[in-house]
Length: 530
Image 1 (cartoon, rainbow, N blue to C red):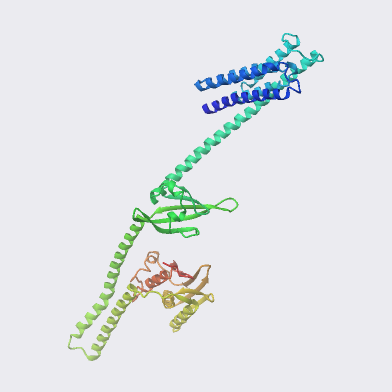
Image 2 (cartoon, rainbow, N blue to C red):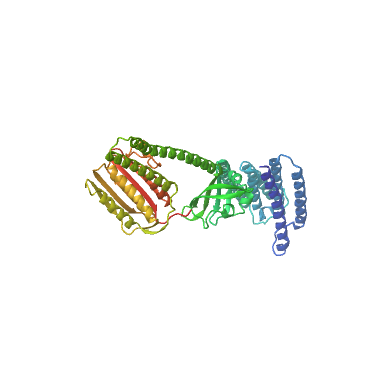
């Protein structure tokens, strides 16, 4: 309020000088043609006095420490006196400048507020009425036209006083509304400042980095965690574009999640970043909101966890291999011990040797499957007509179950589906999933194979109405050497899982105990690079 009071008083002082000298100048321009002032010789002294008074006011204002309201109030009262003198110099009742009292009332309202404005109007009315009455009775020796009667004087006083109070009341009402509006604006401004402060505190204290860019990618907001993560100060960041800070983001900007590396003080940082659009009410793109985190430590922990999981998996595989090899080795040992006996006939010896050879073949198959799984051939991608591979596999599966005819294979395959894949590896996936579905039916049931085309993916589903999979077992079915089948190797589904992921796909399992299972393979039309 201190600065506002000073500005109001300075405006009052300067406007007084401006109006006074504007009027005086007009007298000297027009007084040759019109009788504006009867005592024009005093106007120059009047102007000089106002100029002197202005200097006094400015000096007092410069040294004034308090009491600005009283200081302004005294100026307004002195202005009433000056205006009355000015009216007297220009003819009193015949003066054209009685409106200056109205201007003074308005100035009082602007400078002092709504409360004193009625008082200033009353003082102005009293002063004006007094000098006009004194002029009429000759107390003040200022000539007036003989045609003016007592009624003319009365009406002049009535009109001017009514105008003063009307302006005062109207000004008070306007000032009251202005004060209410000012208070409302101050409240809104205070609320806005608090809301802005709150939002800024939230933005500055969220755990991740936050940035905002315009539609061209120029950075406009960069919070404190963003500075810490990138090592870039806010004032430097807002001079850059999104690509200057995060070089791995595609140009033009794409919506979604991205992961890349930035270099800070010679060290690489892994950044996980999410970009979303900011649009206005009519859908126009205003900019982009970018949230990001430093995933360097998380990535290192994930890498360590994967290494530990890999070591644990190697240990589990080694234990499974040992278990699988121990059985044929025991059979071979027993066979050799029996062959050491000299009293065996030829037919029995031959049967024992056949068992030993069979177990050695079984052991060789286990080792061969393990080598294939542990050191797979990389896929050879090309444009493949998936229907051929699937239909040929289904024909082989039907030939497999044709001996008893108790398992029926039905299909619903979309036509002309081409994907980028390795044809031989897909056949291996289809064969294993189809064979598992047939075996799940336990010699009697139905296998349903369905292929659907989606916008970006193709889905291949193998559904059976067998016994289903227990929830505890379902978690382990893709583990190497895990099997619930007698004589099973436990690598079929493990290889299916690997091949599907080599093709940037997914495999889902839906199973209900007693009702059957669904194995769903989801493959993209084009493989994802990297």
